[in-house]
Image (tube, rainbow, N blue to C red):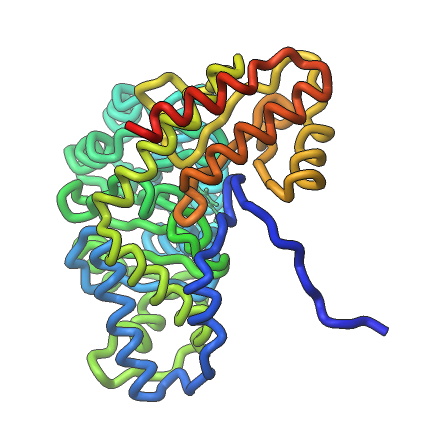
Length: 392
Ligand SMILES: *Cc1c(COP(=O)(O)O)cnc(C)c1O
């Protein structure tokens, strides 16, 4: 007979999901109440205010979409792109490619601005594309490219988009809570994130926020959004209606308890402190990985603290190493994605998983597994190099 499922206890240091704070799992086990219960609606208002804090925005239209990060992406595109619209899509990894797919499925035309994987989006190339396509109405790019660990300059890219009268859609799935995102200060028009990366919540929700300019465009669409579920003109009746909320879909009640708790945890720590913690642990992990002889994919100035992509040393069996880490240390690190498959490991330091213990565990475990495979690595100096930074 099939019995209850009991997952093993893992340490999650891949590209997401990250380790979930036990406080969040406890919050999710609280009693389910109705999604129109006044107490639940009070909690939704708090979630909105906490998300405004996390995104650093006063945008009224700030809420979690009831589905994972990919649905947040789709929400931005189906609402802001109408058939025939020209959208400049910057691609420097896997996720920019998905943006292109979204534009095309909305009946739009995607003009691609491509940069090498591992590099950031080049602002000069974006500007050239906007000059060549004066009829473009939207610019889209990924702030933190999880497939490579490159962090693009969102502020500059949004500025350029606005100079050419375009709205800017920003993917912040991996950035939110781990590295600075300032929606209002940077003028971002539409942004989406995910709960399972630096918010350290369970997967399945996608925080989004839309500027007044984006909202104008959504309200004045000539055609209906192609997705009924993600049509913000309808969703707003539930999330946006001041006090008088109407049924649109049943909110994932307990998942939202989890998001609420994760945002309370973020607020308690303080955004700036969370960013600083990610930066510091990244430097420690980096010191250790480099002492071991591993090389980063991304140039030092463009690295994302929460996603460390390193090349797999020549002749090393990617799958064997990751299996040994999982079986012997219950430690998950990420494989390469797309053109990077088999070439890199992606080591995440996201949210609750971004701590001293995990940095040292990862360096110790990787050092052990590699030396058992007869790869010459200096594992003692790796741990020492990291500890030196952590002690500072
Ligand atoms: C993880 C991720 C997504 C997709 O999020 P899901 O929750 O897996 O749907 C989108 N963009 C980026 C940059 C990501 O890292």
